[in-house]
Amino acid sequence: MRILVTGSNGQLGSEIVALQAQESHHQWFNLDINELDITDKKAIEQFVMSNSIDGIINCAAYTNVDKAEEDIEVCYKVNRDAPQYLAQAIEKVGGFIIHISTDYVFDGISNIPYTEQDNPNPVTIYGKSKIAGEQNVCNSCKRHVIIRTAWVYSSFGKNFVKTMIKLGKEKANLGVIFDQIGSPTYARDLAKTITTIINQGIIPGTYNFSNEGVISWFDFTKHIHQLAKITSCKVIPIHTADYPTLAKRPHFSVLDKTKIKKTYNIEIPYWRDSLEECIQLLKQ
Image (tube, rainbow, N blue to C red):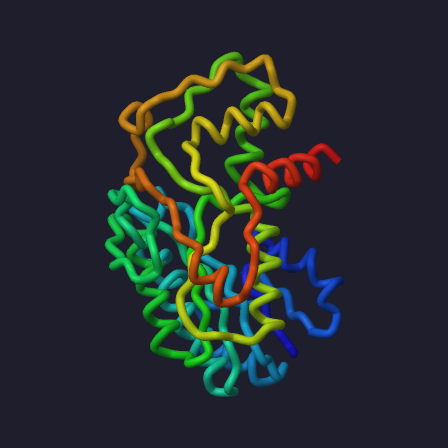
């Protein structure tokens, strides 16, 4: 198949690109914002048609959660409108789209893992733009897969893991929030799952994906430092209220992955095993 990957320079996009040597039976078109403006409907249609694209993996997104509260128009263009243009273009040729979404479509006030059947209730501009994007994809392309994920990190790009390693080496004390709970997602594990979905065949619907296990940001940081062998920094638990942000963070971001595991017969790695793999790569 001929597959377009948007946002190919981001964390997930970079992981998909890294896996492509093992998926050489497909032809890949890896594009980022400088090569294809996904907010330009005509440009997308032209690219899909002229390159006979069979499927799209949309990793592109406006992800600056705090900045989105002020940069509303641009956020909606990228997260709501662009997915619709991509879905409409691939629908015209009978293709498929895999669209990446977020735990921020929920309000984070649950105390049991969110399933795909739970009603979204976003409380941030970012979350509202992402649920609008999901709805546009659902309405615009029959062969769609939407994957909601959370706490994404990778050996590529900027992310929490790399920031905590950097700060751990620089600071004697580091305050990290302990009252926000979730499950980290190693982007490489998600990239492998996406290629599995493509190779097994698209079963339309919305799915949750993150690594197995549940922790707080504080616990996550403690394990990051342990695996990175950082001993000079004391990690201190703090409340969300002690670290005010423009956008409200969900207190509970745990996603139930039963549906994706059963549908595609996959096993999802435990978060600590994946974190160890990523940190070994960073050391290299």
